[in-house]
Image 1 (cartoon, one colour):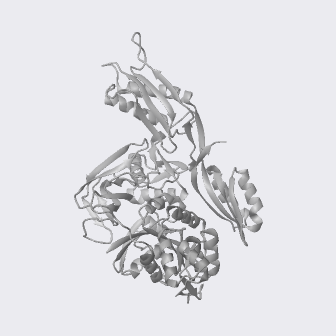
Image 2 (spheres, rainbow, N blue to C red):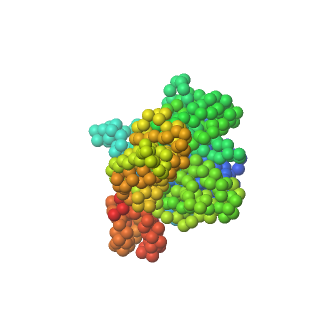
Image 3 (cartoon, one colour):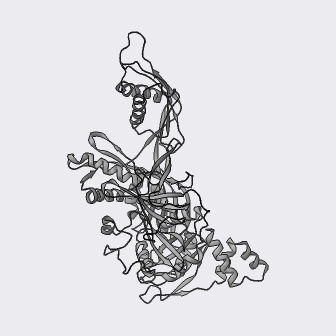
Length: 619
């Protein structure tokens, strides 16, 4: 038996969780179908997920088809949880991109398809809800070719679409399919141009090959709730997604793509293995790439090891996923074996808020809970803020609501969130250096010598502290006091914003024994650092969002005028028979204003999507 790790991706409410339930039920993994409305689905097992009817965290479940075990990774659909989706993509062998036959191609669907095609991940398209009123087939296929990718081949069709009698029927590889294949397969192109015409077997072989390399996408129609077309989708998965090839015996190699907290602070890590084997009680060392480029290690024993879909089976073998317990401090993104640059890169959150415990005696517990939750999403940083509150980075307001409910239900903490604000940052503009020395005679003030150089670091590196002084020149406590104070001081820059992507180097140090204390270094470091930062200079950056706006034909002028007034930079505007599609980038501080104004400018017909896309110097 071999394993395929398949992700189900979609715009929110397209039916991901329902499709997962149907696949598990038809595969014999569960004995009854759960319902999103009833809140009893297998993968949305969190209380908040069941109450809200949305997927918040990636979940793994398995079923078998013949000699194939399919691990289904159900990912969130809401854009506030895009980091969770992108982490899951790293461990997939293939994907199912889900569309609704009624709503069609939506903004998040376009973003997901672009990402899947960039990764060249084998992807099947499943058009759900064919039995709903308003469902479409040919019109939707044309929309897919226009707005997602032209390289799709439908393998099933629908009779009586849009009615409760809707049924899926096989679709032959006709001339349209042959023409599409010719655009991505040189063998088919040669046969079409020079003859003889390709046979159906040759077309099917080309279809499998081009699906495997991610250049073409088969389309299946069906209904997750009714079960129509799901068997055809499963057949396509095991037939068209290639079986991964793994190296022989060796050291274990794998990736942690999810971490879940447990009772007493214990963590369960979901580990996908690419090579070697892992057994219970085996000592493991995970590697982590730090902001300054160094590689950190996290070690522990696999006290708990549960292979997904194979209860009691050990060891964990290549291609499989296991829930791992016993390695303290393990985090999402940690690597077993070697650190690579394979992980997807995505923009940091652009919103910040502060959180305070409604009951002051819970302040310490709130901070500990937020730090534990931030470990599940390394981009959602939590740090101490003024007056006992905790500062938190977020992607959107839904994420804040979910965090509030999680704190109440899982930790028993009532939290109050301040209104979110867009996060501006400062970066060093040049290099600056400053120092203060202990005077040999008549010294007053801090009994410490500190010299610091501030310079820009690589984009995305965060804050890095290094030494040019000799190791051992200062007691360790004094070194630590300087480093901690540097990072704490740069939470507020010259212009009142947090400083990022900096490199601070200790270039001079000294102390007077036994007079000097760590407090002297904590007191002097901000003075020297501020002076060095002033000499380096900083510039303020603001976050931007990439956006897509689908507009009625007569709304193009007023909407683009409003976007231009907000400082939008337009990339591409394309028109169809019924709507315009406008893309570009917009300062994040104006995104909420656009979302509120768009319905009035488009009579409620406009569709808007945006996501963080980096930052730029404030104009």
